[in-house]
Length: 105
Image 1 (cartoon, rainbow, N blue to C red):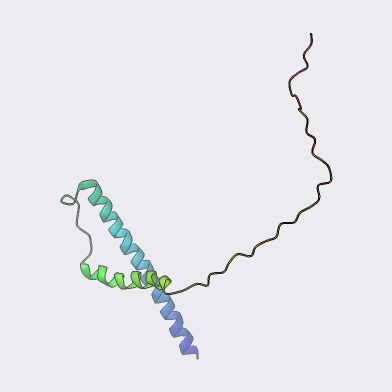
Image 2 (spheres, one colour):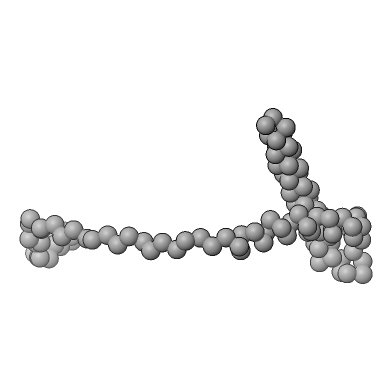
């Protein structure tokens, strides 16, 4: 039982660190894309890692993003609320209220 808990914690920790590594890898590509946009494709410095790093982190990044499409959440219709009609106790006063100062002749 104890070994099973430790194994599950190690799997969760390794997934967490792999996700952080994938995020840093994506940020390195974003920095390279900014350099390409600024200097042009021919004058931009090359990426600082090899293709194998991209392939390794692609498996971690895409597996977590595609998992959301397989979950079908139930669609619940909102509850309709009946409006209460309260009686209006005072009738509205319909007359012109002037806000101008009085006119002295």
